[in-house]
Length: 56
Image 1 (cartoon, rainbow, N blue to C red):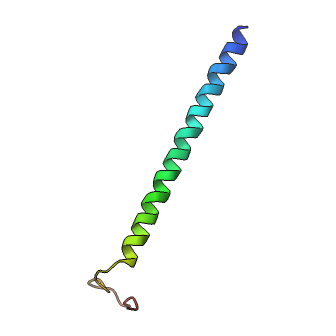
Image 2: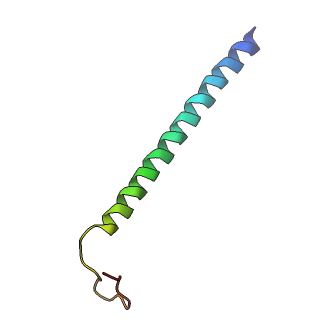
Image 3: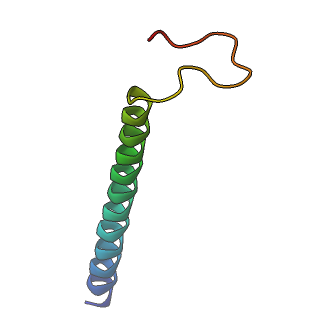
């Protein structure tokens, strides 16, 4: 019975860890999408020191 309880605790820990990893991936994906959408917005075409500029 004791081993079953340890297995249940471990299972709950693994589920919680997997959920936190999914949350981290979701946040990273959202941040990446936000950065990409910001690049498509209006702003400077080139930065100081860049050799090639983005097409307008």
